[in-house]
Length: 279
Ligand code: C2E
Ligand code: MG
Ligand code: MG
Ligand code: MG
Image (cartoon, helix red, strand yellow):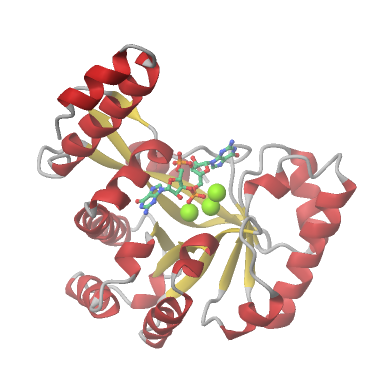
């Protein structure tokens, strides 16, 4: 998209804004061909089960290495892909890639049957009418049970269209997929609404974990979320765990799983496999 006249007018008083706009427009175009050009990769961040103290699965996180823009953070490019609609084919690629990786690891004996892979799903992807069928086809074609794929949807994403989200999540859970609410605590969901959702996992946002050791308020909040989650039959994952003090607190609170730099950052496949075989 070219913006000649508008851009020309802006240059006079706001060069930075124009540059930002150009960067976004340029990235949005570059993203359109990122899949076919092989610029996308997945990184895998281990999740640790606090009962067994073992890696029970990974979260697949998208990485984009653009020839033009270098490494771009998903925080920057995912919103662009959501706005253009390209998140649908890109997210499709993520699922295919994650499924293929899990098949490799299972076949080579690097992970067991209970090992799961979590993928992040954008609201627009979830809204596709055939989403759960398509997902089911993807795992069955690979010979995997639906139970080894976790779908992460953000709390704010769900609230964009609650009714549709509810229906889609119901189909996913009927098909046997595990559904997680990501970044939990950052939206405005009430307990009443939570109870209605066919989800099985709550991922507590990093914002509550960051100052867990020093903030009494964050401790109370996190403790309450974990207690409430277990009351409703959800399991809990704390994200962004960076030190042992946080781990000790979360364990005492009864958190089920943890994920964060304290254990491992998102890893490329070879590093993940090294870590799995070293344990
Ligand atoms: P998220 O799903 O909440 O993923 C967790 C983010 O926290 C990741 O950032 C991860 O690298 C980071 N993280 C993990 N542990 C720690 C820690 O201990 N400390 C700190 N400071 N950060 C930690 P990343 O990879 O940059 O992804 C950012 C967001 O982009 C994700 O948040 C997710 O919402 C989105 N995203 C990533 N991949 C995909 C994808 O394939 N599809 C969609 N729709 N969104 C994606
Ligand atoms: Mg996530
Ligand atoms: Mg998250
Ligand atoms: Mg988060």
